[in-house]
Image (cartoon, rainbow, N blue to C red):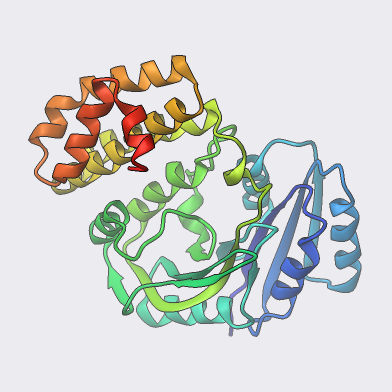
Length: 313
């Protein structure tokens, strides 16, 4: 018998995209679903669309709440979910009809705690498959290494199937837009086995007014703080992966410094340069750090981020 899977969808002002998203879930080949729509204080008619779908399909539950952000909405969904497994999707994305069934079979066949697959990166102009060259099964240490090196495991919560028990002591951090980064490594740590199938089934749709495309703001810099916490976690639990995690942190720190410089966020840029200067001994010592990353870090510390911007580096 197929186990119940809870699909959690944070909904906020996405009336143009919501029907396509919900329709793609309702029409999944895997039918034993609990579909949880969390209306996070929408000011358009997204809430009404959710209610209309609830009348059409008995598997759908709708929560209307004050706006608290996507992490808060996901956490609400986790609290009421009764499925053995959890699947997250953003309300402006959609799925191939067999995506959840594929992930479920992958999880069962490999006796894994997390089942992942590739996705289709979609804009108004292009669709590009992003998936592993071949399927694989990994323990938590190997999966984390893949995460830090960008080796066919993406730092996103959506598009993966999780055993719900992984979330017993884990929730998404509220008020931070890098909630996936802050949460995924902890879930991987709790998992005994992670299986990734080389088949894309999740459509990750990029639109101009989505959160990731909004003007670079101070809240985006929280990724540095999150990754510093991650490095300490790795240092404690996976000593063999410390250099990989440090490199991952420095890459993000460099990107944040360049973007704050580009957006004339002087205070934030100074703080990031200061932090990067503190990390210079580690950057020079780390054997996983590319020469290019070392050079880039030094130029930022010396105050030459504008030259990297001009060179588009």
